[in-house]
Image (cartoon, rainbow, N blue to C red):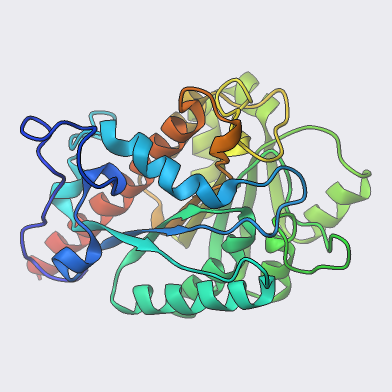
Length: 326
């Protein structure tokens, strides 16, 4: 919580056409225009950790462009997120594309600065490598956090070509570093071939539970969300969403697509079912617009970020109201 000032919201689309003007997230003000934010939307244009198709460095701006059509009232959560809290676009964290270790350090330092202002982060990737430095920063503030990881893949492998920091390793590193609450870890939407059964054994030993995309299909979004809420409890929660948790029909623009994924409707409904959780920050990663068609992937990603932002804004407003009542 930053202050009780009236938040500055998006550009009025009844006066300025949606396709005109700067492409900030949801047409919100820039962080330097408002000076503060309860929720800072930041991009990390980095994809040097990918193992297959590159291009996620352009994902953040693609999501911003697709978010031009977002509107200020969210009927699914009965909330106007940009009126409840100051949400602003903090621009991009500029990182070295030739040195992964340096990039990881840069992201962590920038996240430290933003979280130090009292803001929560809604980060737009970039590849999934960026989740590790973001989690490091969040854990400095909140201690080990619960994690919901939406992804087709486990991302708990050890190394690729001897590299410890890649988009397939962030959550193994996070467990090793003690920045995750291992009693409240879940993958959601996993599917597809693995290198071997040992991948699942190793993942379980780290503390992860798995809800596959087939589980979501068979059990439904409401039951899955209820299970996740029970596992998370009231712990501080970080949500990391690889857009490839969606089926390629709903997210073709990504680096490592897998058949048999969730629909965008299922993802959004599960997130809405988590509105009571203590969401302290989140990311949406792996949007690679070069492989997209008609902005299918970036539209899904922008709506995903919108739901996450709404959850955070509602919680910030509720906490502020509680403080005022004391």
